[in-house]
Length: 146
Image 1 (cartoon, one colour):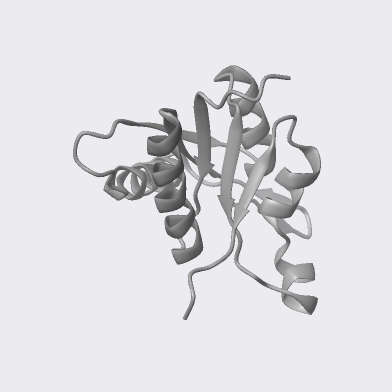
Image 2 (cartoon, rainbow, N blue to C red):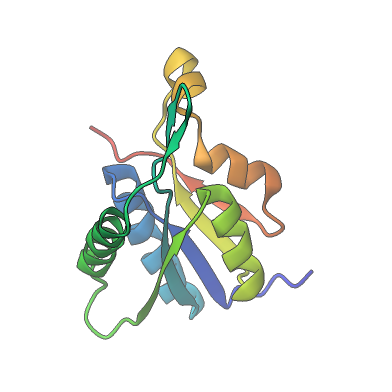
C-alpha cells in the first residue's frame, strides 16, 4: 500500500458537516497536491405496501437526480481549484466503495454528524460503514464548532 495521496474522495450529503469535510478535503488536497473527487450517492425511495411495493416514476427519479446534480454543482471550490464531481444512484456506502475502486482513490474524507444513541441507531451512519469497510484510509471530519 502506497502512502502517496494523489486522489481524495469526499462523499457529501449536502449537510453542514459534509460541507465542512469538503472544505477540509480541499485544504488537504492543496497541501498534498492531490485531486479532489466530490461524490453524492442517492437512493430512490421504495414504498412497501401490504400487497407489493410502489416504485418511483421515471419523472420522480429524474427530479431527484436533477436536484442532486444541482446541489453537487453548487458546492464550489476556490478559484483555480478543479473538483471532479460524481453523482450515483445506490446505497451510499457501497457507492463510495465502488468509486474508491474505480477512481483509484487513496484517501476518503467524510464528515460526521456526531449523532449518538438512539438517533444514530435509527438513522444509521454512512461514515461509520465507510470506516469499517473501505479498502483505503478514511479521515473523518467532525461537525464544525457551534
